[in-house]
Length: 477
Image (cartoon, rainbow, N blue to C red):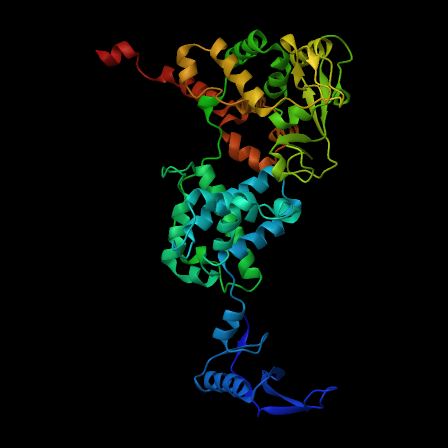
């Protein structure tokens, strides 16, 4: 808000209007003033109202109150004019982000803003049950698609009506205590326990974006997070070495898939041998798999996009599956990844036994004994099916000690194993980043400890120097 003290208030101007047909003549009263040379005016039906407004302007001028150059009003009045509740601000932010956000990110935004709103209620008086408030926020207020589609659900109408007037104004966040309360709420789960560091950072970033948008639109003078010293949990971006399978464990895990869910062995193979993200594997089509020129040779995968399962309420099509371009790439980008001979063998066997679905995608949901029949619609394998198959294979392939450890807890850990192996073999980080679909910066942050097998080489150099030390027997004596 730009302000000035250069203000002039003029006399009230009477404006008389001729009578209309069958009516009486009338008079209006216009208050005129100038702020930094720019003229403003407001018209009132009665002289008393005009004099009351003019008195407010003169009082503010005499008391040395700054005037807003955009609205011409004293600063307190200008701020009141621009006042916006947190609920309205959050909805405005959802509408801003919705067109360009993926379905999954839309869900993340709704989840974060719902958590924030529960901490920014101005009162609990007359409040509906907490579960109903959360449902109203998540399913309606922070879902632009549903709001644009039609009438409010009857079961949420009372909660939505209550929310419209019972969240704090953005101006209230100038109080550091309220801002700290908000940040503390983002760090907790629904059960009151501490949320994971990644969840806290994700929610804080989303809520910070909503508040920053409030600053951009002039509804807040500054970002409230900047005035509070609050530390989020430490976030480690580096891959957990304990979760990365070695070659023996990786092979045993794929054999476990073959024994329990054979139609998904090649799906997990694309993650383990080519570092595909699960959603990229689901989008892989037969035409994107370039076969080896000779048996036992290398092939290539030409990746064009990804499939994510987000729920019908969050996509633009109403389908629970959303097709997106490659992560952090333009929509028409293609990423080429070498397919090692073992992966080509898996894919060839899979395509022979389980032909691609009608869409051409290699990994489609199947019906019938052993998953032999392809569903008519060629739907991709569901997230639940992938998770179930992976945990069955893990139980079949790993020892009890390995099952209790963090090793390969998620299918995504197979991708980490592949990238880690490439780096440990001395492959250029730039090339690995291109194959894996990372930026070099992110790759170095996540896999720094694996590059060029630095640790193994360092230990070997240390051992080479041991010959200069006395024998262990001599030291013991």
